[in-house]
Amino acid sequence: IDQVFKMLESAPDAVSADVWYRLVQYVVGFNEGTSETERDTLQAYAAQKALTAISQPHPHDTLVQLSAYLIGEFACRLRTETVSPQGILQQLHEHFPRVKSQSKALMLVAYAKLLSQEPEALRYQVLSIFEDLKDSQDIELQQRATELYALAADEAQMEDVLQS
Image (cartoon, rainbow, N blue to C red; front, side, top):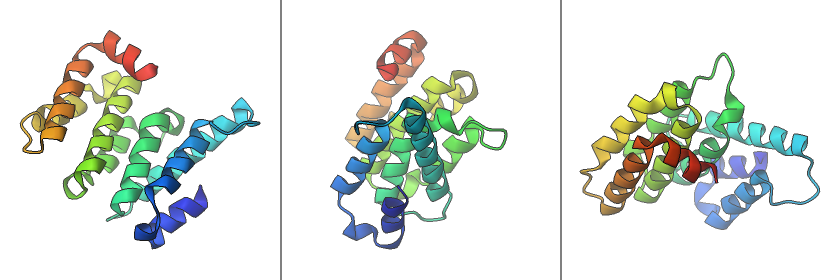
């Protein structure tokens, strides 16, 4: 985990998407022989590393993609007195205006997953983001925002879809 983050921080253009995809597979638990406790610890560490990475002023687009994925999946492992759901969303979303469309699409899914984990704390903020993007000139973002907005409006359906 540390090595991939270090590579993405120092030479991000030299890191192919396959490298961070493989890291995600490892953290998610596609590796065999890892106990549940070890996997939970690994996931919490990866989520914390992602949160730290996006706290930097201008992380590379690929680093934002990896961080958005890990935070979307494992933000529930970050809950402490000093890390609020709103703070996580804010740190991630501050990079939204400057990243590429592919990164934005990943970020929208991460927002939806954060919302599913913390509906009371994040409903207004996340729905506002989706609402603003329903008129985006980027057709893929517009489509994704519209779909996620509709999904988020139905809590039961959202839980079923995002938990599976």
